[in-house]
Image 1: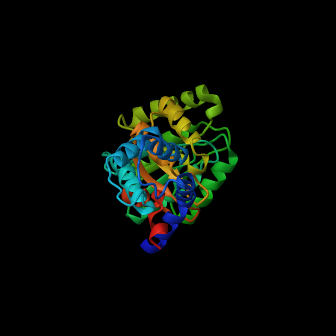
Image 2: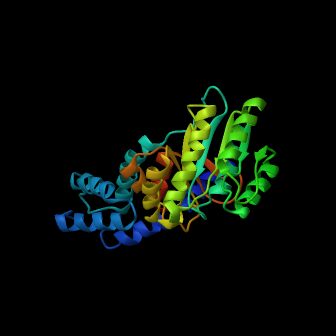
Image 3: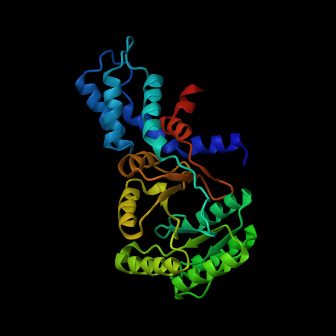
Length: 311
């Protein structure tokens, strides 16, 4: 995908958030004095746009120190919103580095069913293949036959090997085989799908614990990454998922998916503000090449709707 096309999709992906921000701020522009009451209204509007209380408070404090000689200008407000959002997001923007030795680098991918986890694994595999890494998949979500089948289709389409078994099989055994074959074949990255059963946290913890023990016998440093895939359309529910998966799985980084224009992408800011976890990538749709590294400046401008205002 060209950079221009990606840029257009990115701003389209955050359209709901930027439009909602504008709607919530309607009636506040043009006010000559930013008194406490007006600042309170702005702060409430920002919180209602899913930006989170801490970021909304930061923006309020920034506005309180600004001089608006002709009243509060919409573009100036959005510029300030973008600048403050970027400050929150910048520390979270960390690329996924493939640097484990000995190889393979093991990446566990977790997330609730329906979050786009399986498709994200395929996109991630394609992305890494484009960087000349040798990639192998493990279909470790053995509780859903559909997940196994979907991942096998993607692996075939991308042209990479996959380790899979039957529905109800032992995920840890598949991971063991994946690391064994990956080591023998000189694979750089082993990406492991896992079951996303939040309704049964004990079962999820037991399974992930078993996978970790198996990995530890083969490579004490593995898993090197535990990526949580979040569905942006769930809004604030994504925060509770981070909370639970941090507790059960030791999340090391985030990937935000389904930023397709219907999502409440402001939750990305709230997640960065509250948890400080690295955001490695974002996905804007269903095509294989729509997963890209997270650019905090561009995302901040998209959330603030600056491109729309500029036209």
